Image 1 (tube, rainbow, N blue to C red):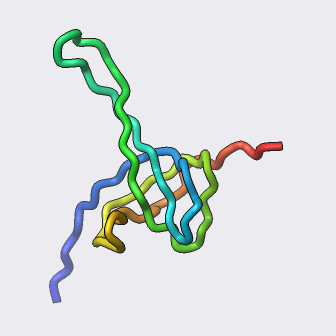
Image 2: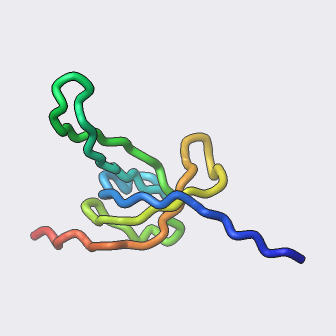
Length: 89
């Protein structure tokens, strides 16, 4: 049997919602240059990612990796938690 290595895309973003069961919403921000004015502007995208243990909280910085479709909009999987959010009092 031959082993195949799969290069999966990995993105780092902040968790903005944990309201769904086993699912987190992650906002990934990137910096692009404006086509006319050549200034740097921030753009963001939101991705749904699978969190099997419900281990993330809002505000956590996480790494998500591409995977097979899990549901209609969920095509990413939680890889690791990079940084925990500060506890709120």
